[in-house]
Image (cartoon, rainbow, N blue to C red; front, side):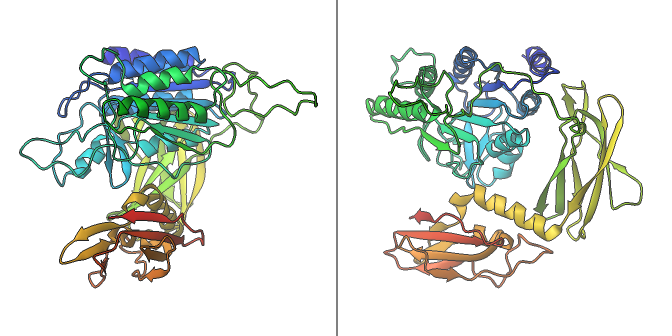
Amino acid sequence: MRTWLACGLVMLAMTLSPAAHAEKRVALVVGNNDYRYVPKLQKAVNDARTMGDTLKQLGFSVMVAENLNRQQFSQTLLAFDNAVEPGDTAFFFYAGHGFEIAGQNFLLPTDVPAATEGQEELVRDASILADRVIERLQNKKARTSILVFDACRNNPFERSGTRAVAGAGGLAPMTQLPEGVFSVFSAGPRQTALDRLSNDDANPNSVFTRTFAKELTQPGVNLVQVAQRTRRVVSELAETVRHKQIPVYFDQMVDDVFLNGAKAPVAADKPAEPQQKLAALPPVSAPRIPPANETLNAPIAMFSRHNGGWTVTFSIADPTLGISWRMGDAGDYRETGFMDVLDPRTRKRMPNPSIQLPADAPAGTIQVRYVDAGGEMQGPFPIRFEPEAALVRDQRKILDMTATSWLSFREFNGLLVYYTHLMSYRCAIREVRIGIDTAVPDKVLNMPSCDMKDPIAIPSNATPYLKLPPSTQFISVELTYRDGSVSEIKSFRR
């Protein structure tokens, strides 16, 4: 299997990286059945193969990957990155175990450990964060990103006689999507997806995938209609066996997206209006000619604050043989080192894209340079580091991705509602307002001030909960962020 995967990565890079780039359709489908430490699955690989065949019919260049461990999953995503270019339509399909931790969805490789209660970090470290797949496609400037997850199964960590990692099965909703992203889940929040309708159901695919693949090939149907039709059919099939499974989709598309031809216009006496520009471009179009000044791809950086300080991760579009950096305009450059992963573009060890800065690192400019695939030094490129602004951006992003964890109810000598999560990321928040049994947040929650030296820590004298009347049914929450923007009002029920 590893030989096949390595060949697949190289062939994908060769076939999907033409010198004269035409905006195209690129897809990665992943199916994981053969888990080593958690229950195996039966149909995930079949689902990936079916989706691969379906997408090929729709003009996609497709890579199908099966039974990936953590390292293979990372290498496969890297090859997918390399295949996607600005303006492309990118399609990612995953069938296998998925798991939610604190509002974040993780895709489980085949070597994920059999974690127990309190070992959530093991799962995080060994898995693929679904939101990161979206970020990677955004960084590649894909015009349209379509993500489909047939991973809403039971908690894979449940074991008789042990307490499992906290989770009720299913995945969390992805409501904070960037523009140009469309995601589909095989079941709604906290629901589980059916592999089959009965023991006599001989269909090789799950109930969702068999339906979705069929609807996807219907001519003249846009993505929203595909998702709606799939939801109706799957929910009706599930009802026949008294199971609740309602696929959900989250749409941040600007234009209609048709993967199998747009609906034919209806004849009319009045002059036809100009045809709407579609988000999904046909598989073949005129080659893109880069501007004369588009010769270098300057790195961008993502800053993440943790208890030990800062992690700065550089994103470089070009294949690289080495990365070095220094703080400021003077002093020696330091190499970032290498990872135990091969870059299929260079067939050499991949440079480590991350560096660490101390918690008290002052504002300044990071100078980054890299050696390209031809052995030429590129840069240095200046990247500005502003600790306070970087902290606010990082915590705002975390809050957006973990909105389902803002509040939690507890029964302890009465009814309590904890807002520990909001307190941990308070540096991005100007004000928190809540409403008790009302959809209008009309009360202000007092939050400690931001401590730049230890921003995540909750002060010992802070009280991260409220006592509520026992009759309370729900609480509404609205955040005002440091930049003055206001969140959607979220509701939390007991």
